[in-house]
Amino acid sequence: MGALVLWIEGSYIRSKCESSRREGSRIAQGKSAATDAALGMRSTQGAPPRRARFEPRLQPRSRFARSGSPKTPLLIRLNQILLSTLIALPLVATAHAQTPLRIAAAADLEPVLPPILQQFEQATGIHAEATFQASAVLTAQIQNGAPFDLFLSADTGYPKRLIDAGLADAAGTADSSTPIVYARGTLVLWTRNDSHLTPSLDLLRSPGLKRLAIANPDRAPYGRAAVAALTSLKLYDTLKPKLVTAENISQTAQFVDSGNADAGLISLTSALTPRLAASGTYFVIPRDLYPSIEQGAVIISNTKQRDQAHKLLDYLLSAQIQAQLAKSGLTPVH
Image (tube, rainbow, N blue to C red; front, side, top):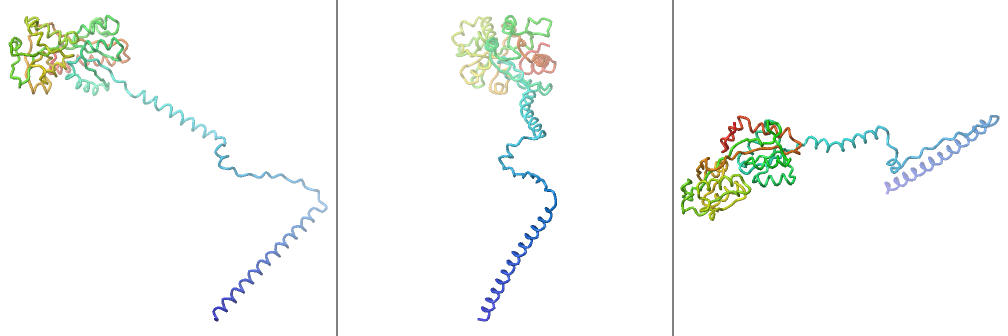
């Protein structure tokens, strides 16, 4: 009970003190106001009236006002630089991205050319890409506007057609109207090891030969060479019913390798590929049985990479690459 009395008394005393403090504050404020009024009356008596100064009151801008405020010159300039940089970046990237040298290459070059192009890029920094097809097909594509820079044919006849049509040239040579011969091809007779047929001229005369694959003579120079060889041997009429015709020399090799033909007249470049070298054997057709397969090159007239095309031609004709072509089944011209 005593504690309760003390608590009540303490609360009463604190309440009285707080009331006294508030009362004192009101009295002090009243005196201050009276004093200020008295001083104001004395200062204005007998003194000229003063003109009131207008003090503009600055209003805080809202976040919406700040967002629409004019930019400073420095900020405008920074925005201009940033915009110019963003516009220029794609242009710079395009300028630095090298357009590949596009090559139309005969099908017999498919096992040979890719490693040479890699070496060429390492030596010169020029990236080249090749499309492999029959020479006649590539000629038709170029005539129809295909975007090639250089044509490596399996003969000289198709490149000469393009020169005569004004679509290609051999500029930089003594006779720019004649294709540049970069190699000569070799025709071989190839059979699979599991066929138990030995490739030879005697096999072409054997009744045991049921199907013989050749490239289309109307499209592929090696196909024309095969027909010429069979004609020279006086075997064309006999073997004509047995002929299996492929679109190009690469497909001819596939026909024999897959078992769709017993033997095939293919290029030496195909016969020397790792797959065919391991799975079959070949016989070189005597060169006097067919016209020389001179493989010619021309530069496409509307190319924008003429210098690069010349560099690749020079590279193909160099002693180092000519020796490499010989190992791959092509006869060097130097």
